[in-house]
Length: 105
Image (cartoon, rainbow, N blue to C red; front, side, top):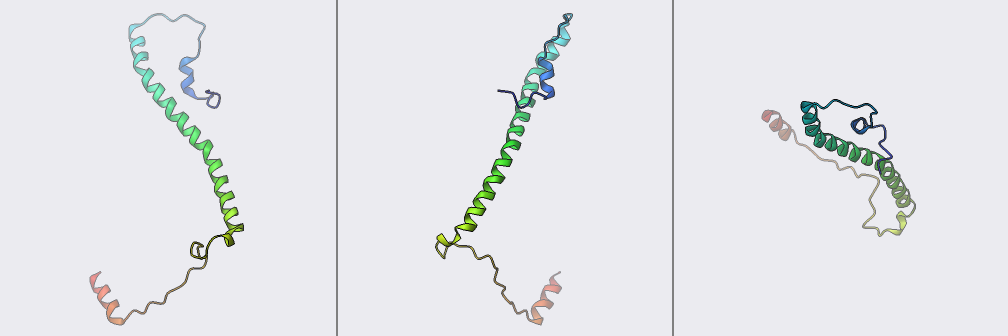
């Protein structure tokens, strides 16, 4: 309900001013043209603000999930469990292959 972004500068346009303004056609026209732009900016800032607030919850949830997985890894079948150690594969490269790759470069 707008309580989070009370310090946003787009609300300055809606602030009530206790002084009468003299009617000016150009100012009124510019104001009416600016209203859609201001609302667009406000919605974008609000969307960004909400996503920033939700990031904290997502990271905490990931940490909880990782901790739960770490504690209960034995419950998963052996095929599904991920190996934490990567196996190293030795690849033999002949002298002829290295010369061909150098010639291509």
